[in-house]
Length: 162
Image (cartoon, rainbow, N blue to C red):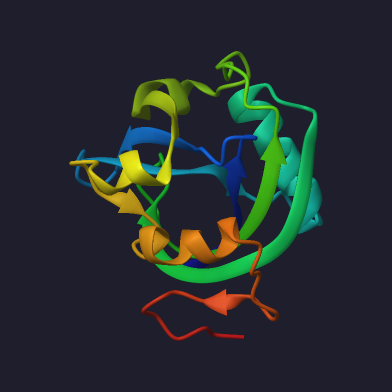
């Protein structure tokens, strides 16, 4: 199985609301909420990829990137249907919290993503849909309190293959 390095961003506004996207998984069509982010381009750094993904998926350019906080490995499907091992790095970031724009979306994103929404932690706890990563609700409060793991915390059920 091919590996795909990705960056996911825990993008928060001044009120500590987290921006999540609601989309359907390629393989099964089940709706879920997940963080902004995507695959890194060849030779692209994690920070450069994060800023590019944020701009493409939200239209935001005034973003302050924080530390890498989590690492997660998961299997997933690309829009082509190819199954890949996603090697995800999660970054903490802040922005002004404006209304996100979909102008930079690719056709497959418009097909698979239904909504973008700012979520408070309290509201997210009552969300009826799955939220990814799976441990987000347990781990986010520490980050909101300013406690960042060093090195980043491995949150995947899969063993990291360095």
